[in-house]
Length: 241
Image (tube, rainbow, N blue to C red):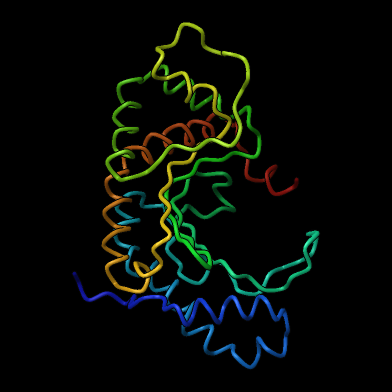
């Protein structure tokens, strides 16, 4: 194990984050702000610092700013039904700068009061755009199968939150069918063993999983870059929604 910046996120820090959310009080937050910063926010930013070299090797346009990559404890409740001001879960994204590359595929890490997870996600605000991924799967089925195998080797499980009900590609190979009905995709790992995020070994775990699953990121980004070059995704339109 290398000498990482990240030393762990302790159970005590997670308990304080949960208590802060339960209290939902500006006074309580201000009283414990430094503890929350040092126990939660700083370690999350250290994860980005420790993974930045790998992420830039995967994609040299990856944003590696630790401040902008990590969620805030204080929630922006404008436009949300829930007016709870503080989070009990935290996450970070490893992705291209969203203003220039909206909807680009991304890696993530997150934790909750009783679990943590990480993985690779490709979600587009216009589900019809995902048919461009379908096209690439049909054009390069062997490359896709290799990418899926890389995610399996990384310990990831395939997830899709929305599928087309109709079989859009009746002549496609059977093993491709479930992917060709997807409107979004994720390859994820979840664990209820929070002791594993209280050690620098988490960095080795994330590095290994993200590196092994690199072929899937490369497949996704190839499809995404084609959407950009073909004008199907226009950043200026995305942020006018």
